[in-house]
Image (cartoon, rainbow, N blue to C red; front, side, top):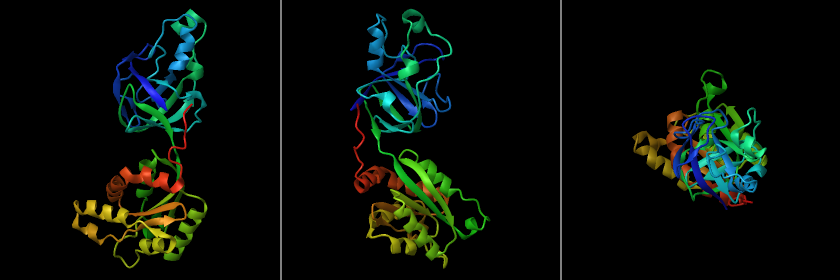
Length: 305
């Protein structure tokens, strides 16, 4: 298993970073207090201690942070990670690899001394998908990336009379776990939804999230369509979402949302409003890893070098 052995920051770009032992990774920004935070897709840089030791073998007195990396690692072959790989950093944070190496426009002081520098070849860059605290000694390991589909069910949305805001929100919320491969907007028509859900299951989606059509309106048919497709119900998901939502509004008891499994695909009904989607997803979030790992058998499949 890979390990973070140093957490490094600098107040200015173009200078060596100092190992501060711990820090806070901020979603979409980077390492708090570091000059490179917020730098587009290169929010957090990583370099292996094994790479630094190559420079030590050339006689240089260098250590963590001297190559301006944010995280110094051990026992994980960073340069072999494909672009897009998600990395679990400590117990909370999730990074995604965005770049391997970089072009060195200005020769640094280390290059001037040794005639070589490992960072342009062996350093990698990541973006922060999910924030959290990290410290020296935390684990760093690749995590599975799942295939998702989002189906928004709305007559007005399908007719172009209302903007779909819940679908894009789900894409953002699910980013730490995987990418939205299919995003569909359908009217409240049961036959069309059943057909679409079956098609997405056949395409091998790991999970399908629907938004809308779970209430008492005569046109609300999402639960009925879902129950026609699933083979095994998972009632605890919808029960937990209703219970938590009831604390915010008694109207939550009127939700008829369902959840279950078809083949190896998890299907979950969520409400139509962005606010309710966010609230309900926060209930599902703590168990999503376990659910997907159990269904797909991909938990722990990613090894480290």
